[in-house]
Length: 149
Length: 149
DNA sequence: ATACATGCAAACTGTTTGCACGAAG
DNA sequence: CTTCGTGCAAACAGTTTGCATGTAT
Image 1 (spheres, rainbow over the protein chains, first blue to last red):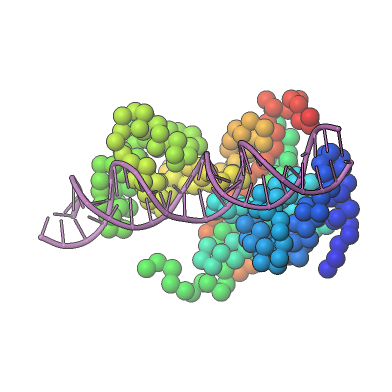
Image 2 (cartoon, rainbow over the protein chains, first blue to last red):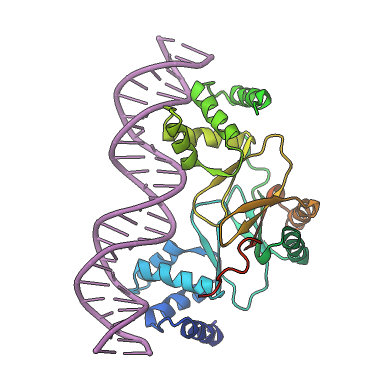
């Protein structure tokens, strides 16, 4: 699944922000595109390293920041201390359901969330930026297992 | 604002879970009660230390875990890697609006969130546990300031 | 040519852990 | 008196930073 649009978009973003167009940054972007689900920074770095890339950890972190700023990916924290990323470019806005037992992350959409966020921001007189809804529970595969020891 | 209910509740919880009733645990609870807004673990530890407490960092973290498990406080992560806590006991369920500029955290309630979460859990066949809605934006005090340099 | 990105390792921060001592049950 | 909690410091994980080198502009 090659996506030239994303690369073009990133190029435009880098130019606009007066950041350099470097091969490393595009190597990271490629790895992100290849990695279609939720991933974390260090995992991506390790995976790239395993695949023979010479890009350093620092560059991976730097580039993920830029990709996040550009809106190509987004960063979440599901109650843990490690940040998870996911490709956003061209995707539908959505929210997450996380299984407290196996850690699985699933997505769902509900247009009411956006409306609700807009209402809340309006009453609080905030300029709305982003709304994050995380639903924690136990997934169908994990229900019925041992809960309370 | 002394609250004997909370202490009693915590005592009951500790007994039920067969954990010991120690003065240190109640020292932490007192500090939590005194600290009425959103706080973080290390900040609480430092504050206690400044106030002359001899309770160790490890005990503070341990106790915050137990207080969280008991439902007396709850733990959030507002997109950062440090965990924030807040007193829940006897409070209304609510959600948070966070200012991306000054970091201020405000609260709001909207019964629609619960309904939405229940719907989502039902369609995904999850056993609902908890729903967290964070709204990020720019607060009234910070709008009009320099945004893009 | 020169400012900015990179690679590396070391620093940092928030949190957890291992162990010997002390106190709760 | 035994078991668990404590205090301390050291380990840990994820992320950031400082500096010398390399490279896009």
